[in-house]
Structure formats: C-alpha cells, structure tokens
Figure 1 (cartoon, rainbow, N blue to C red):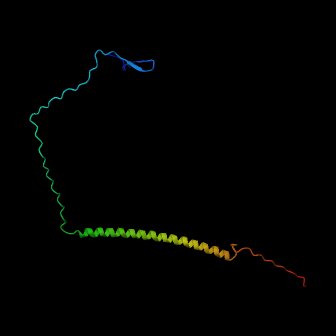
Figure 2 (spheres, rainbow, N blue to C red; figure 1 turned 90 degrees about the vertical axis):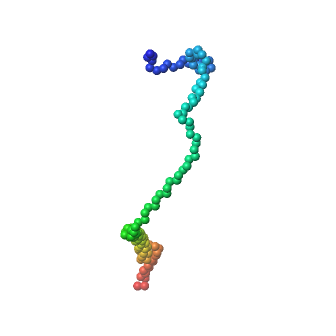
Figure 3 (cartoon, rainbow, N blue to C red; figure 1 turned 135 degrees about the vertical axis):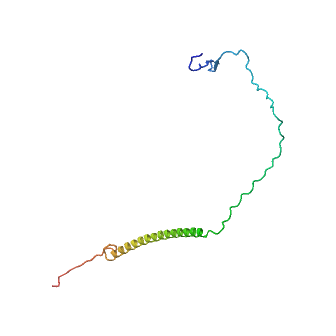
Length: 145
C-alpha cells in the first residue's frame, strides 16, 4: 500500500530550446486501438407487430351550461344601483375638484386685481412717486412797502 498523500508528479525534462518532455516508463507493447464490440442481436419473446394505422376519435364537445330558469332581475338591479352610485361618487369627486380649482384660481385673480388697484391708487395720490418730481419756486418780495 502506498502511503503518499498525493500522487507524485511526472518527471519533466526540457531540451535546450525549452521544449518539455515528460519522462515515463517505456512502453513494452504498441498501444492498442479501441474497437467497439459488435452489437448483440435482440431476442424477442414474440415477433414485432407491424405498424398499424392509428385511428383518432375526437373528444365530445363540452356541454353548454344550463340557462337559468328565470331572469335574476334583483341581482341586475342591485348591480346597476351599485354601478350608478359609484359613478355618482366619481362625478361628485370630479365636480368637487373642479370647484376647488376654480375657487383657488378665483382667489389668485382677486389677489392680483387687489394688488394692481392698490398700486394704481398709491400712484395717483403721489405716494408712489410714479408721477415724477414737481419743482415749485416761490419768490416773496416786499419792496413796495
């Protein structure tokens, strides 16, 4: 029994050009060429059956579900009422959003108009300085007395 933990590497010899040659034991006979074994004949208990044409029978069509005995009008009324109620809620939310947007826009317009009016009034009374400077020259003479 071999007690070496790993297989020993093959001895490698190198030529003067650096070409490796692996040293191994010389062959005692030429290498054998692999030849597969001849196939064995298959023995049947009975002779094979010649191919027969296959007949395909289509599956029957599925049966249609039975029609209800009477019209389920209460269910349709309930579904329609629920649908109309949901549509009404949706329209209500849309109208609410539209009125909120219009109110916000109206408020912004009112603030802008108020600011414009205040700026114009302040300019008309001379407080804004938008009319320009006015030079006043007063000469008081008392030489006729």
